[in-house]
Image (cartoon, rainbow, N blue to C red; front, side):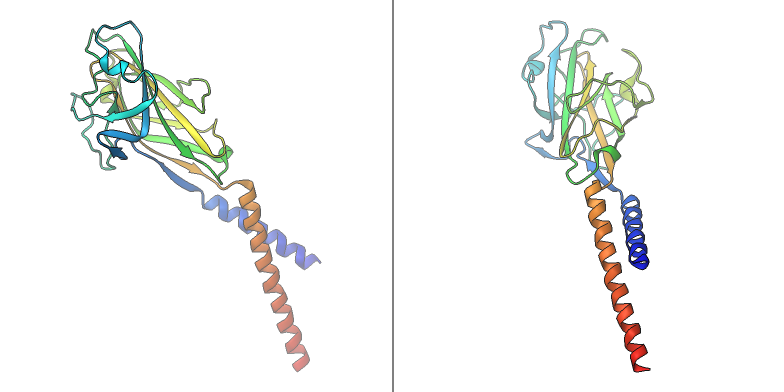
Length: 242
């Protein structure tokens, strides 16, 4: 009985250790990589006019979530695209303009949305990292699964209007607020309407659900018991032969 218990405990420990060591890395679909007809099929965008602008044709076409448009323009200060990972900027229009420019004050607010699936993974052990995050121009925050908008977790801290954010690569880290199954990530920025958009590359690190860990440990325990029984039979056979 003690031997059986030892085998079970050892197998469970091996299962837990293997699962911890085998945390999964899941890529977030980079902006501008899953496209059709100039539209990003993995990212949506919604635009809100903050000041009642008279030139807002592009924003008006995205007052509800619609597929983001891959930017084909090359505004000064933007990183060269596509990146080594194939990412490009996305916005409400191919020229990244929501309707002209009036100074540097924010005139439009954009919510960029994507989804990812954590089925079979533990949401409590998940971390999202956008390691290559570019934005033009003003950071508002992120929201996960319809939760509160959070402005922290980004590094370096973005500057206020006219602070040159469009020339700075940022990193965003999120380690709470996830749920089992499909998750929704919103990235919210504001801009003056001249050249507004984002570029995102990143990934998720997650571990299996506790049920998966238990199944793995149980399976290893079963293998251990079978091996032990075979060993015992072999030992008895050798003793009888002697």
